[in-house]
Image 1 (tube, rainbow, N blue to C red):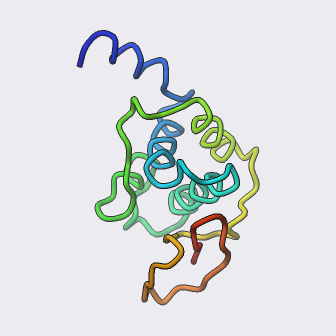
Image 2: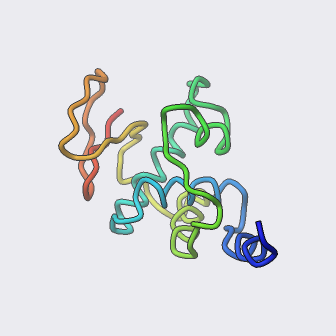
Length: 128
């Protein structure tokens, strides 16, 4: 890493490490979605952190790093807009449009997870 990329990564991180973790997932999983779609994906992560199911992890770092669950972009991919979405969700400023969803997948993907669909936002289906 050059000094320029190190400085850039520091400048583009969010206010908290938790928000940066969420923003990195938003970049990888929902960067082409509307703000509403990005908020919904961020709430899936928050809902997992807040759940009693520790298999997913117990905090934002472990939930976003759990194998086979989310794609996570490098820290230098984080943008101020994604930080704003992540920070709004984590602070409680945003309202959960997913009604407690703990899973999502892209439209057109067939899954057999035994979960209930709770909504569709943008190109994603949300389940719990």
